[in-house]
Image (cartoon, rainbow, N blue to C red; front, side, top):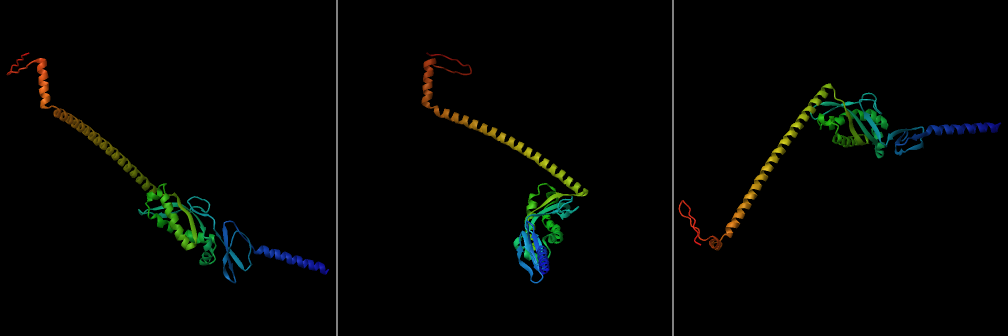
Length: 286
């Protein structure tokens, strides 16, 4: 009888131990780390990495992502965006334009303990949803105020997105211990009035570009005519210089001796030639 009771007690204790161990088992998923808070000792400096850990019932664990996560604030429903999360930003030309935005981020593993202490026990998701999202719209506007409405509306937003990424990485890194891998405006949603303004500006820009193209064509044509005229004038000058040089060469070659020789040869062939008065009389004395 005593043996049976002992076995029951042992089994109960073993089962209780298993239950306690199961209750104390904490699993940290892939891409996360855990910060431990003890009721007795406060925040622990050591973090829990991916896997299973035994954690006393007097301790709590808060998780922070250290792999890439996405925050999406879009007009349509996407992952992480419930309903219409688009927001207005300011521009350099005093316009307000509605945008959809996304940001890839992760917590800096070596700073999660300090971040946990700073935000008094909030985990990573709580910090993003209640703190980061609150200030993000104002932070984005600090960058977009350096650009015009047309800069933001155009599909070529590479420079703006690069500046957003750098600026938010600095701001959120200092404030929340968050590293921003990429931040970008993914879409623009102008209202009807703003859309008309944009359309008018696009038309004006197209007309300006067309006028500039026409002026460039005229400039090229005029320059071509000038070049052709200069080439013709230069050709004539070269021809005149060549002719003058030839004449100079001929003139230099006609000497008194040459003239005397030519006269002698003419006399030998034709005899004397006499020219007299208005009426020319040619006589041959040969």
